[in-house]
Figure 1: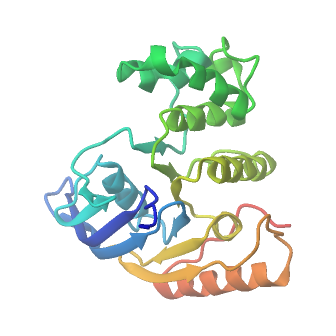
Figure 2: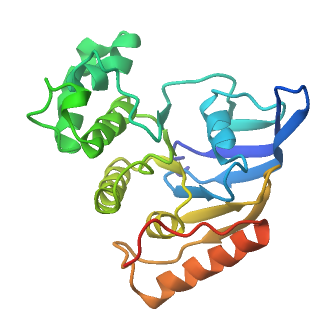
Length: 264
């Protein structure tokens, strides 16, 4: 009997990406990046500011195509954006003229499948704790609630992979920690691959199966660290701080130390 293959495997091989500066010079963002991400895993990308983490995430999304090398999802090369890859931005980026329900349903309507899937909109509204706020507009809700709506919008189409581009960076410390737990619960329930860009070392250790530490630009993979901690994790335990210290040392070697936004 052949074992069932889980969806959501990302294979990155020898990816390079450059941009042109306003003065015409070339800016190399990614330099021969190779990485395998197992289906259903939670992987964080961390590294010096401006090193190319978001560039890599956008390349996986198909928003920026690599100059060379390949990115594959379940063996199929990524050449454009697709519904099988959800994307949550640092800011919620909700449409201010739409209420929360219509914001969450927007992708389903764009794909022409809203009628068949509208019960999923209700399910995800309840799942992210926004039941009762369906008719509210983004300006009427807190930053944390808008971020929940953004996550629901990214998840409602049942992507194989959810890409998180510092989705909690604009939140206060306690809202951020609560949202970390909510994202982990969604990940646990839906067993999708999650890839998150973060500058927060504690956040990466708390949430990830693996942490990919990237070098200063042009980015390459400096080191991959497996986080061997049971869940739910305790931020104050000694082994948590051991991982944190190790990552900070690698980041210092790579050119920059990023301290977390909070301490416990």
